[in-house]
Image (cartoon, rainbow, N blue to C red; front, side, top):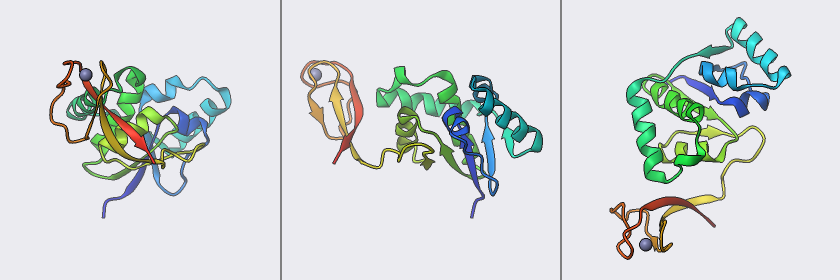
Length: 166
Ligand SMILES: [Zn+2]
């Protein structure tokens, strides 16, 4: 069995999640994104103690995440730092069992698509999501998630994935 590790985004660190049992990993961009003084001090002391380790995603994983985002229609809602966090989890998946700690719903959506587990600090996560549909950006026609084309058969606009609720 692979060792369980936590990949933290800024919301995870600000939410006070730093595991003492498992390794916590994040990127340097996440650390510089933290503006809240208390969280910044906590993150910096955890870095000094080695409770949090800094790693960067590899190129292959970054590309894979970019493609997943483009296919999901979530492009605009994810920052570069968000993408790096997801890509870091993809990179680390080769050696570990990464669980991403984030309260960001857009990050959680991409993680779901990539089949990477996540944990929410403040909220309950998107547990109500049970499936996906595809929707046309133009005429809003709905398609099943396995609809194979990127364009709508009615109007030719791009089709994107959307989580559906119960
Ligand atoms: Zn359409």
